[in-house]
Image (cartoon, rainbow, N blue to C red; front, side, top):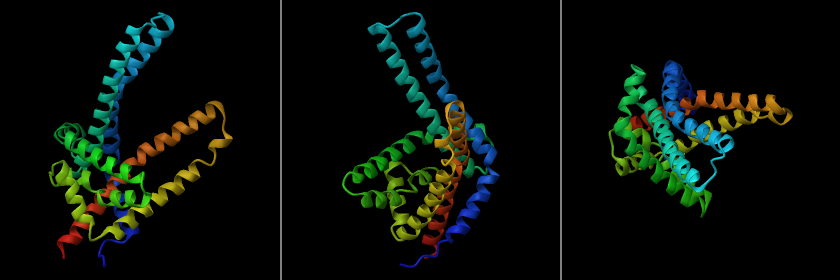
Length: 239
């Protein structure tokens, strides 16, 4: 089973260059997604104030704020998912307009959502039997979300398309994903070294900084997946 895919480190380098090119656009798109979290924060604050200071602790309180909380959570998930789709739309549009890219993410939402849910449930279900089948499935479906945006596929068509792309390149694709995951684990381990030695505000600040760091580099993993998709697709078309 031979493969003409781009070597791993070269692929990581080209992904880094594309990530740097779109860095500020990615961050702007992430901020658009965070707007969806605002209603959840408002509901939480109002609920906490009423519970503590107004002594409103009856059944109606829990029912009303339970419903409002679930609605706000659903809205936050919707917006954050739109932002993640928006990252791919930004790449597709060569980082031309963040606001336009966010608007263009709307028609893809349900396809992206159901594709992610179906593949996630498959991997999760297989994990209960053996970890190896879940890894196999995760690699086969690695490109489903990318295919939705760049090939305009529907939910199950995107899953089938991802499988077709990977089936003759499973080990090369797995190796490249695993290498990137290994780098992420190493970086995470290094960043976590100071955490046990910090207490109080210093600990909370450091944890917050780590979370910000991963939020900033998060788009790189998506870019890498996109570049790997292009490489696998090109390799398949050349045969």
